[in-house]
Image 1 (cartoon, one colour):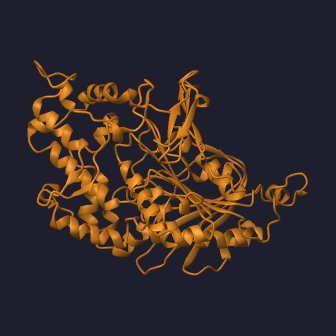
Image 2 (cartoon, rainbow, N blue to C red):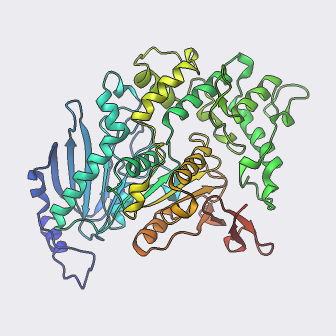
Image 3 (cartoon, rainbow, N blue to C red):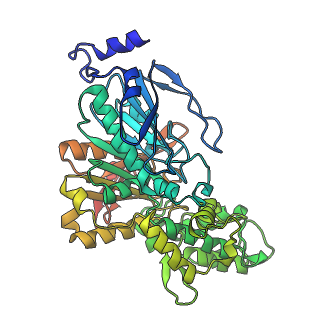
Length: 513
């Protein structure tokens, strides 16, 4: 196979224009001297099926077919307590560009293959198949939850922001050593925690990437964790407060029936739930309790979940509520125990106490402590993107309006904060666009059109200067596309032209509300 790979790298450029001449043989990269880096191996991988390693707690992943490439694994040690594993895959048929991908949750594994999210999911495998040199990292640990951070603040710093930056620097060095040139363009493409990682890069290291996709970003990690604890407390205030999952469909149906046609089109989707004034009392049980209705205590619980979480003492709102339309995913926060990522954040990062009990959380004093810690590490809320924009960086952020895990108004609020910090929409429209996706859940799924080529729009913007005035999203059922809709740059929304099928994006236009 080594001979075959060498031949691939020496093919006449007119036959395969994307193939460049290797300056350093793949195996020789193992001896490359990079600061704070130990290269574990560098080896040629022939084309064929690749079996990803099992991610912690996630079970075996299906094999995926990959093209010929040079696979490099390394361990980074920016602090004495760091042990950041990363991989770089260098395709034989290189398109001259670099695409890094991030992680969901608390990370803990390299993102070899897509773990969900439909067409918007990103992975090393997808990037490599498209001809990109690609990289990913476990962010410095192998744990499924947050226990890696217990008594290890440097490891939490690695997870919060340092690992991605260090990975990016070393990946670019390996790319240059192997191909003899730096990538012509560098991209970040990820969702959820990966979206937060992308925003953190734009804020802290504006020169790392030319273009960033930040999907459904957990940009306010501390606020999300606090809101999850809030919902857990509301759900379990009494035994009667809990809303069992069997009732989610009835609640969702009632919300959609109330607000579906606010946009003038009855299609089973709430276009913008911010404008939806829905009272769950419409399904208050009139007789015996059943899955089709809510008891009086459950109505109050639902009202509190829709409402912003607030400080019980001051009344100050600290996090938006879940939106009407998100009900099918309420089990994320509304289970028997609090959302695991939130519970772990307070146990292992904020309070450094594995026995911490969420019922003891003080939404006044404890929140202040948590926000101070989060601001310096994991929360990606800095609206000053001046340096990223000044060097020509482009940012596309997207978020599903039905997201039950990372609340969509956080993306709206961050966009607004950047707009205000940078001097208005005229100052940022050439660099930053937010797309809200009606009916989409967390990083994909949901009832609305949720498949779209955000990365293609980003690359076209970066490389050709064409800003995305809209992106077409599709909904696929039984392997067939049954609906398309335009996604509009916020605050524009899709408006039906009044003629033609409402399942065809061509019959909608993007307008200001």
